[in-house]
Length: 219
Image (cartoon, rainbow, N blue to C red; front, side, top):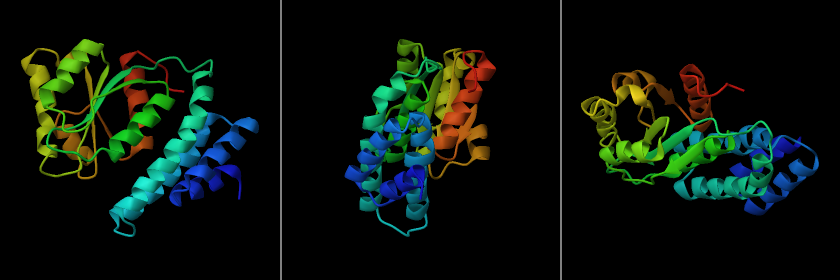
């Protein structure tokens, strides 16, 4: 089993100590820290998320896996910042839509976006729709990204595009939507420019949107 596969297993098992040790070994071996996060940590977290969605594991196991991923990321962060080609690829205002307190997925997206070179302003959970717009204006953001886990709260998502149109700001911002109950067709009808089924896909979508906007190159 190679190091990345070991990292996947450590995250799945929720082993913080092992994840941190493997992250240090990855650095010592000269592996790309971004690759370690994408193909090791995030892949392990994605597997756990899939199992949780199929009711094959419980929330405490998901939380342990997230803690293990975070332990590895903390080790890798200083080396990510040293990458000469990193730079900022864009600014994202990120949060969980109002009425929804489920932020685990949002937190993983934040980590992945930051490691991909984006500047992320995390608004947390239960974020009023107008605050997304207000913070985007304040931070001069490129992307407004919102997630929802409940079908009852995802109904607020179309209000982001509606408020932007109301303020004549729709062309100024890219909108990304995601979360367990959200699907691509619904996101598009809700006014989204992009949709990510999971954290890895969200990063790719954000990169493509910024490339189309002319603000960054897709690596």
